[in-house]
Image (cartoon, rainbow, N blue to C red; front, side, top):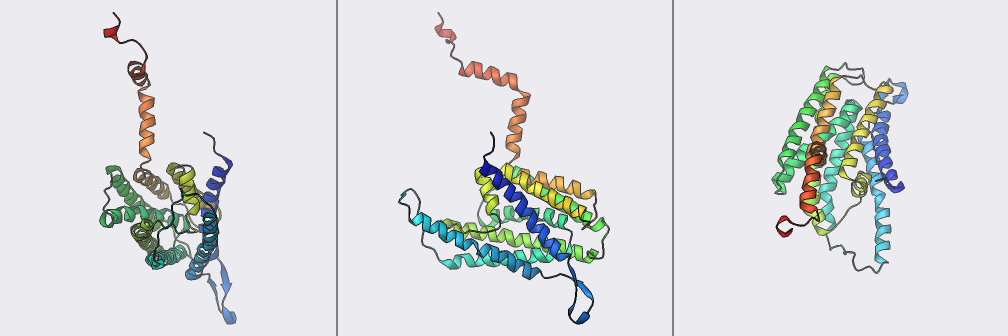
Length: 307
């Protein structure tokens, strides 16, 4: 089935905006300028300013929210479910988690390579799965537990690649270790945010607009979760390739292995192996499947009625 122009637009928007978001922040981190009064040069290290810029972009979504609300109020469609009354303070705990996690993320980006930064963000799968079991009472499938284990293995390999790679003047070994740990901490806080939103916000039929992830949610809705995962992986590859091309980091072959294992863990956790197994099953047993269709779905006269 061919994609529509709107679906192509969403996919391109997710890939381009996600890549620009990370690359532009790292580009700013690489700026060097003289200090006040002719003091020595220093790098741009203002992660909290970058976080404020991100939240200003999210805050601008309120304008779109009120426009959609006015449009909905002018329609007489009774099939649209009205929002339940809710306390605005419900947004405070997840908003604080979002602010803390985003700030830690930009701090980590100052200290580590952009490719490792992008790959280590896959740790959110681990903590989201564990917290959903502990606080939401969910039961994970065996494939999801296997995906969590694969993600842990991939994170270890990516972290090991950081330790073994040659460090430059900007990223010292101690800074890289600290940055990697900050990324993991940020994913813990983001996972807590997701649990809080699902437990206290979404049950009131409230759908807060957030700038980060809106195109991702739209891609999942319009296309599929598989497409979103592929686009996320392509975004990591684009960021990685541009970072190497701009000499922002040094390539280490262990990162390829870590990336592939992380990709496998994400696919297993999201259940993307089911359609693959179904396709393999149809490919391996086409004759048997055709025989079953003829035996069970045919219009032939039953044997005991032929006489």
